[in-house]
Amino acid sequence: MSLTTKHCAFAGRMVIVGFGSIGQGVLPLLFRHIDMKPEQVTIVTAEERGHAEADEYAVRFVNLPLTRENYTAVLEPLLGKGDFLVNLSVDVSSVALIEFCHRVGALYLDTCIEPWAGGYTDPTLTPSLRSNYALRETALAHKAGYAGGATAVLTHGANPGLVSHFVKQALVNIARDTGVETAVPTDRAGWVALAERLGVKVIHVAERDTQVSDVPKKVGEFVNTWSIDGFVGEGCQPAELGWGSHEKQLPPDGRRHEFGCDAAIYLMRPGASTRVRSWTPLEGPFHGFLITHSEAISIADYFTAKDGGHVRYRPTVHYAYHPCDDAVLSVHELAGKNWFMQPEKRLMIDEIVRGTDELGVLLMGHAKGAYWYGSRLSIKRARQLCPYNNATSLQVTVAVLGGVIWAIENPDRGIVEPDEIDFRRILEIATPYLGDVVGVYGDWTPLQDRQRLFPEDVDTSDPWQFKNFRVV
Image 1 (cartoon, helix red, strand yellow):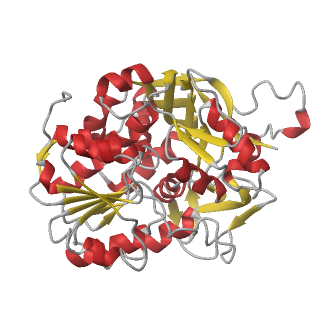
Image 2 (cartoon, rainbow, N blue to C red):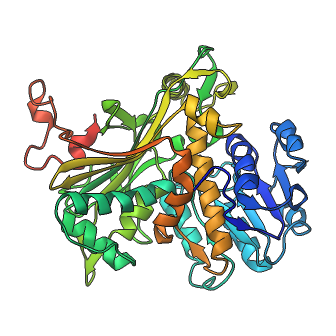
């Protein structure tokens, strides 16, 4: 695929809800790779930011926040059968928009399942009900009833989204490199069987962002390379992880949910105050935040094998995120203010002077130990590839592009998660924008170099226990 390939044509109307860093970054990709005209697209957003970028592409820009009370009235004149709602917003209920799109027959895609404003930190809700697990269960409750209806692609950004396709490619690569003869699976049962046969116990979404600005972070300022509201919102949710069948015991602050698929647990503390050990090839070992993400739940659920009601196989899955250094300082300051947002926010785009976002999946426990597969995208390369993007946003926006194209090509699939989509098609679209896409084996384990200082802090009987990954 070239950077000018038109993958498909779209004759309907498209509404982009939310126009922050991801909305602005995806707009040129949509016009580059989908045959449609500017007059087909309308942006509905909650702030003036991005108006100039919309004007450059001659796209209608509506500055009007969507609320519980007005979203139907705002969207009904803009969307009907065969149209497309691309939801890149915060503080707008994904489930409400999915229900709306199903009713009118419009296609739908989002990058995470959002509640209405305040849902992430609502003190009247239990931690379980504020979780991504609960949000996912609420959305999937419509799956059977919406079967055969207009396609609604859930959680298809970089992560969640692109990383689910990385996992499948990584499994194929490990099988090849360990002499396991297998055809590429074509259904869920085949993928589960392959992961179990390979002995994968743990999957991290292991990300290290080294992008650096020439404008230092100020006191009272939250700085990040992607949506600050999105990062803080999910950082204030409970830490969540898919819970593997090899785990010996729950963490002391771990809790199971009393409803749903039971593929994940949560911790009684925010994800932005929970750290885990992980590894990427360029960075090496690092401490990352265990931020809740839907992929930790959906991947674990997808790769579950049961004998009757007993779980025979499931990997432990979670995010291990080391954001850019200014964002780490911002999180530290945020936590010190008891999770009340700083008065100023700054999204790093033009002021970035160097750095790379190393985003991939780290599969552990198989015959070769640990295998990282993913994208190494530098800020320099990102700027060459697409305007209005940094390295972090481009990994998201190209995954949004891939999900939109897949939905146009598969318009009647109802509600689908990334794990149910053809991974090869998404990677075909995304790979030209991901910099160096590599797979690297390593001998790293979470026990590395630790016994010499605090031997009582590790479980040497099985290095892949969550206890060994968690930083306490």
